[in-house]
Image 1 (cartoon, rainbow, N blue to C red):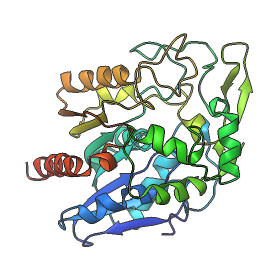
Image 2: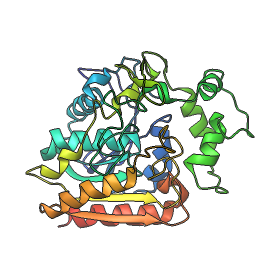
Image 3: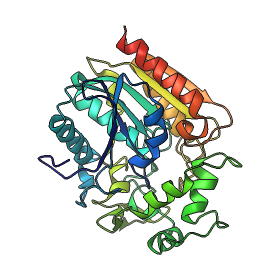
Image 4: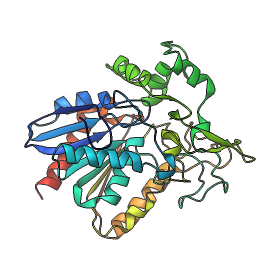
Length: 327
């Protein structure tokens, strides 16, 4: 789909006059992660899942991380305009939840509901140390493009398919996307999507600055991981929106990527970012100011509730959409 901003690769299913549901994928993946969910959705819905800028088969354009995720938000707005979607139910997984929430903040009138699936914290990923999002260091060290494991990046560049290394691409899917010993039936599709990640200082993971603070890297200005640095990203202001779409928050109890002691947080042994507690605190404020929030925690599930427990997710998600849509 060619829009005024970018040529977006989009998966879609359902009638053109159906109720629009936009699905935003997470980091190191693409819209393909939603295929099983999309074909299982009731036919009353028109599901739309784009590959975000920097991912999948969408046009390869640089992300200006100093805007947080606003480049991706503006891309989504342009896509909805091109597809004649005035408003939609918006769902985002992991980093995609950051885009979905920022979109709601800027365009609440176009959001029928917001679903957060294992969402990144309202204060981004890394670099903060309490429920209010206080930075660990003034330069936000511990967040951004310099925090990715160099060995993993090398294996990703080589499109390594090793199946016995936890920090290889396939190992990341098997050990951290899901709660072991769960195996996903379409893990090869997820692996191929990971290999389509646009790489480099201007792409994934992004550039970085040196820092005198642990772990000696501070966020740069380009690339997807820098968009999630609390230096540039903060959606806690959603709590004060005058118009508040209903929110569904779904997470896995065994998530090791987004947790209060994430194994991917460089500061986990010194000043861990309480990611789940930060989300809960912001949603508590949203709810206290007349917002509607539904919370669901899936036991025995990791970072991909919609894949690891697809029947329960479908029932929960569709039930929420129906409640919102039908009043």
